[in-house]
Amino acid sequence: IKVYINISEREYLLGQGKMSTAKLEEIPLELILVDGTTYPKKGKFSLFNRQVDPTTGTFKVGALFANPDARLRPGQFAKIRATTTVHKNALLVPQRAVTEIQGKYLVAVVGEDNKVDVRPVMPGDRVGSDWIISEGLKSGEKIIVEGTQKVRPGAIVTPKPFAPEAKPATPEANKPADKKG
Image 1 (spheres, rainbow, N blue to C red):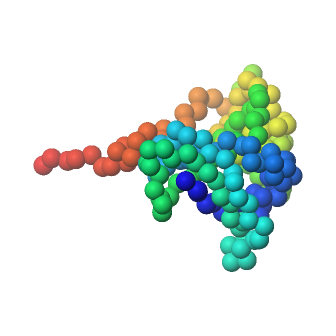
Image 2: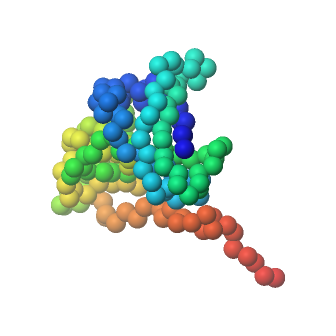
């Protein structure tokens, strides 16, 4: 089945800077269905429209997915995921741990003596709600995620482990519980 997606000019230019159209066609695509499941068959790019839609600023791109059991139907909505780059040994930090001030990105690091040091960092790509930090941090360093606006360099803190919010695993998890009364 053919799946059409729109890619922004920005995404297109980022992709063109990294690889040729021939290499883009080799990228395996994943189809994320409306219920959050991943379609078991991988797809591939098959069509690249040359023209930018002036009303949306996007290119139309087509992808092909095998559909032997007719699970995919015309008119369905889904998301496409393409792995364009792999960063080995990347340092991921929650985006909210990074503060931007006048075009500079800063992270509050907790030293061995629990003193805060505010350091400039170089953020890279975003991965969900996290950022890859390419410069300024080392593996294993403790950073401040909550309350970054309150800390100052040299302040003494009592660090606590960060627990990211758990995302519901299924759509049923979002439903309110039945109340008997």
